[in-house]
Length: 143
Image (cartoon, rainbow, N blue to C red; front, side, top):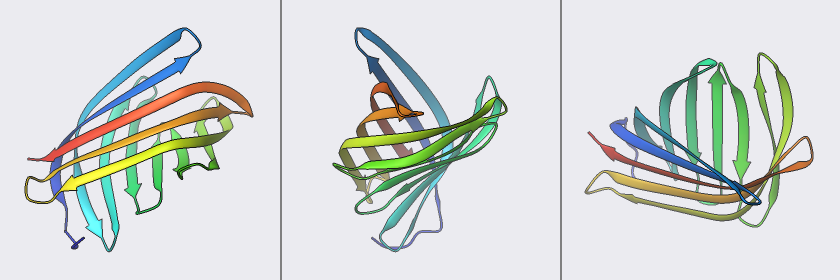
């Protein structure tokens, strides 16, 4: 990969949470910036939710993905294929230990078309209790 100073991007994030027969889909669309440093890509964007403004950084390295959130929600979770990794999630209401057991990480970025797609599939645990199977698909394109 070559280094970039940042490409303004439009992104769409689709999270699907399955817990037994229950399924929930959460869609977020936002403007952000995609940049590359060495072998690592970074996607930075803001979201507004019921708790307030949240800054998001998705760090996409060759062997792992890390999601960092700050503001109304504080979160750090790293994903590594076929591994269980610790993390945390916090709001004004408290802080919880998290862990993710990751099945799949797929990432592709087309430099010519300035488009990318990240896919994660994992089982999530909150305070050592299984919270369901999650998939996260994040697509973005330069604007």
